[in-house]
Amino acid sequence: MFLKQNELEKLSEEFLWLKQEIFNSESVITKADFPCVFGVQGYKRQLHYVSALNYPYDSKELSNDIEKYLKELDSLDSKESGLSGLLVYFQPLGNMSIKAKQFLSWRVLSEMKNKFGGVNDNIDSDPKQDNYSFKFKDELWFINFSSNSYLHRDSRNLKSFLILALQTFNRSNTYFKANNTIKAKAQKTVRTLAEKFDGCPVHSGLGPIIGSEKFSPVKLSYYIGDTNEEPSFQPWLYEEFSPDKIVIDGNILKNVEMLNEFNQFNQLKKPFELLLLDESENNLYINSLSKSELLKYDAPNILFVSEKQDNLSEYKGGISSCLIGKNNKSSKTNYFHIEHFNDLLALYK
Image 1 (cartoon, one colour):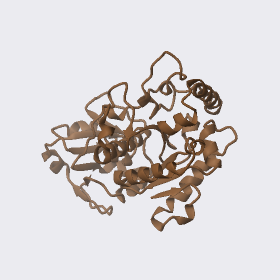
Image 2 (image 1 turned 90 degrees about the horizontal axis):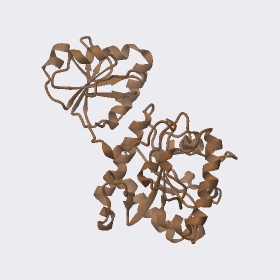
Image 3 (image 1 turned 90 degrees about the vertical axis):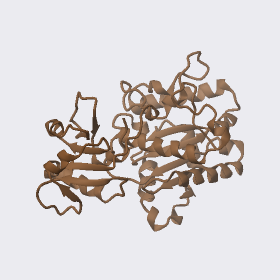
Image 4 (image 1 turned 135 degrees about the vertical axis):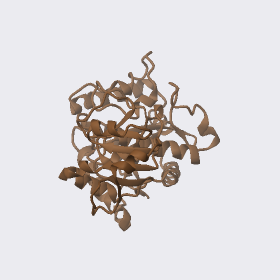
């Protein structure tokens, strides 16, 4: 759904969740010391536009919203269009790790580019190359990922589930009169404010100040780390893993917190069959199977999820294994690791 930032009264019932998400993000960006001064100017002048994506997130919907946004920019003068951004809100799903959100959002962007991009959008289209910049509808884009999963970098935590702030390079360049000196001054201002707001230096993924001789790939600015010790996440370096069946260790659900999280996850539409490893009957409205039945499986597209590594080792035949839990870490590189059940919607290897 596409709308102007001040058109929330037009929301249909299926998008009512957007009101709370926008309220959350506005509570951050309206703080007096919020560092993105140009984004704030656009907000105060009501120049921003919103794309709201219901789950399951549809790349075609986002493509249509971007087309509408670009048409709206044509109706603005250069000073207005240079301050205008497209804020893409993803419907909240509940608990999800930051890397799962980053991979999920990149999956939507890359699918959109592959399915609905034009011929010119395929120039320099390999994100593994250092000179890569995201191009769509014949425009190069700035991409800013924000999420309530950021625990340390407050300027990237807008108290909302997942937001992509998009802006075209062309409009920004015109706004700053294609002058690198003006751009560098603006960059320094924003970064000084960000350091105060976050209580730490800006992330290296943002690269050097414009005009510096040092080169930094633009793509590293898309998904910067929560701390300066964490490198920018590069989802394009991984392949999506799409299992046909996921088997959940029933012992996980003896924990009330995990059970509540699972029940929420189980209500979502999923691209795989969900099974429960449990000898007893369950009232979770999913099919169960026994240990002996699981041992018969011999296919890598079957994923077994447990919070105990010993349980995974017991079924280490031809199936894939996944360790769940914030504090559970495994030295085994052939294990998937997730923090929350919702992370199963964005598996990568």
